[in-house]
Amino acid sequence: MTPRLKGSTLILCVSALCVLAVIVIAYGRPVVTTQSAAQKWNPRRVPEGTEFIGDQACKECHKKAFAQFARTGMALAMEPVAGSKVLAENPKLTLQIGPYSYEIKRQGKQSFYSVTDGKDTISVPIEYALGQGRMGQTYVLQHNGNFYESRVSFYDHIKALDFTIGSPRTVPATLDQAFGRQLGARELVSCFGCHSNGATTGQKLQLDKLAHGVRCESCHGPGGPHVAAVKAGEPGYKSVFNPGRLGGDEQTQQFCASCHRGNEEFSMLQSVGMNNVRFQPYRIFHSKCYSDDRNIRCTACHNPHEPLREDAAYYDSRCFQCHSLKDQPAAQGSAPSCPVATKECVSCHMPKIELKTAHFKFTDHYIRVVKPDEKYPN
Ligand code: HEC
Ligand code: HEC
Ligand code: HEC
Ligand code: HEC
Ligand code: HEC
Ligand code: HEC
Ligand code: HEC
Figure 1 (cartoon, rainbow, N blue to C red):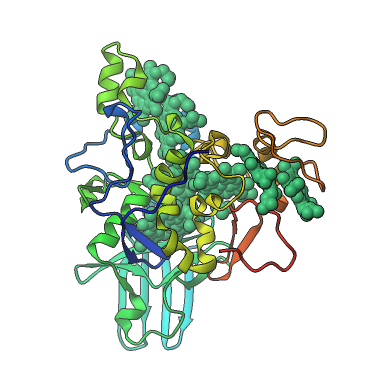
Figure 2 (figure 1 turned 120 degrees about the horizontal axis):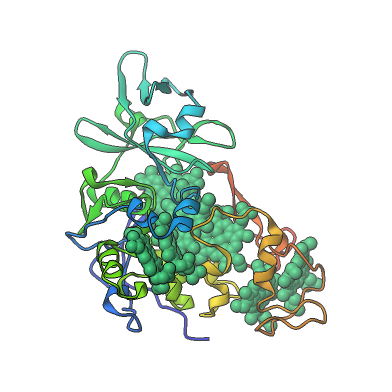
């Protein structure tokens, strides 16, 4: 086991939907010295001037990854409004909060978000729909030349609107507040930086370059040099970043955590209480199972090119890498066997925890023996 990572300096700012948007400024995470220059990539710190070539360019040679990835939650992390499944399947959504009436209405390939107090109305076309909608969807809107996060969001479980996570659950004071929460420049960069590709370089917005959702190059870095190198006869691995080559901590607490949020933000994530169940790198870090071992890094259980597996049995073989099963030794480790069951391990040891404000049950990545009536371990 290598030493666990210590927190680094972060400047934090509070966001609404993801509860906390984190902007990492100026201070670097430890540089991955074992990788060559082409293989260093931080999805959230895209250097100024970076050019992306888009997923279509990868299709030619990586057909399988391309086809599979299109169906993942990450690929759908921002839906283009014209093709939005969520907005098309829910053509009219309404909600009343005090004197304010909300409506999200589909008209052809457009959707309009409006709020009225009976006298005045603000109505705008939706431009950015964030979230695949498995939990829900929140809208980033423009009004009077500013960007706003919609005050209300769609939630799949109730197939209806409710307050956006993180926004105060009280009757807004003005129509403007009822409309949404104005987003500062940094928050916008974060929001688009996690849910889309190409829209931010050098911490600046360039919305004309936005590709919806997490894309191949979000994780693999700009593909231009790779395609050119491969076509010139060089081996592919030299010219592209592959997060599969990262060590356990590097991948889990730095790479995937750059969007999913990890232990570097320890004190901040602790302070948000049960909401931190959404931040898997942070949760798994607390588990006795966790170490720098590759068998417990994010990709041990998730293939980022494939849709999320929801069958508990799928994950059993991951546990057996380290845990023995009755008299059978584990594949590699020597962790103890379970006195209670022999399969579907995650169903008891990675409990689903309901966040009422999200109308969704998240999977607690703090793998543990769950005590009856336990208080949420923070
Ligand atoms: C002209 C063909 C071609 C195109 C286009 C192409 N690649 Fe590759 N890529 C290769 C070859 C060949 C390899 C090496 C063999 C392999 O791993 O499949 C490779 C390897 C890779 C690897 C693994 C590197 C490693 O560490 O082993 C990644 C990641 C990758 N490509 C990503 C991409 C992405 C992202 C795109 C689109 C921006 C892309 N490739 C476009 C041919 C291509
Ligand atoms: C550029 C930001 C970014 C990076 C880097 C990233 N993710 Fe994600 N990931 C997201 C976002 C945003 C979502 C939420 C998508 C949604 O539900 O709309 C997500 C969702 C997921 C999901 C759930 C998918 C579903 O269908 O519900 C898994 C699993 C996942 N990511 C695994 C990983 C792993 C493993 C890594 C590291 C190899 C990683 N992610 C790196 C942004 C990222
Ligand atoms: C630091 C990266 C990051 C930032 C910043 C961020 N998100 Fe997310 N978002 C994620 C990840 C990772 C997930 C998946 C895990 C989860 O549901 O919390 C997600 C999930 C979501 C979901 C749920 C999607 C679903 O159906 O599962 C919505 C909606 C969403 N984000 C909207 C937003 C909005 C709006 C903003 C900006 C105001 C924002 N996010 C900022 C990373 C981020
Ligand atoms: C969320 C991050 C993420 C995204 C988005 C992503 N990949 Fe990957 N990719 C990975 C990781 C992690 C690995 C290493 C997988 C492993 O080692 O198990 C990988 C590996 C690869 C490889 C090496 C061969 C393999 O499958 O292990 C290729 C080629 C590749 N990716 C292409 C693509 C293409 C093309 C896209 C877009 C269609 C894409 N990736 C999108 C994270 C991502
Ligand atoms: C030991 C296996 C394991 C590891 C390691 C693991 N996960 Fe998961 N993950 C799961 C299981 C099981 C689910 C729930 C699947 C289901 O039933 O929907 C899940 C679900 C998710 C989801 C969907 C949202 C939710 O709460 O259900 C996201 C996002 C996610 N994982 C991200 C990650 C990231 C990022 C990492 C690395 C920090 C990671 N996971 C490491 C097993 C794992
Ligand atoms: C990388 C190796 C590794 C993997 C993979 C792994 N574990 Fe563990 N796990 C350990 C170690 C090491 C311990 C600590 C054993 C001890 O204290 O003797 C542990 C402890 C546990 C405990 C007891 C925790 C406690 O708080 O007392 C449970 C329950 C558990 N693991 C379940 C699982 C399940 C379920 C999976 C698969 C989803 C899994 N583990 C995957 C290594 C691993
Ligand atoms: C039906 C729920 C359930 C399932 C399924 C389950 N466990 Fe457990 N597990 C428990 C309970 C309850 C305990 C605590 C038992 C005790 O302390 O007497 C436990 C204890 C453990 C421990 C701690 C053992 C020790 O000696 O400290 C490990 C490790 C573990 N389980 C791993 C697993 C693995 C791996 C699987 C899948 C093969 C699994 N569990 C499936 C309920 C379950």
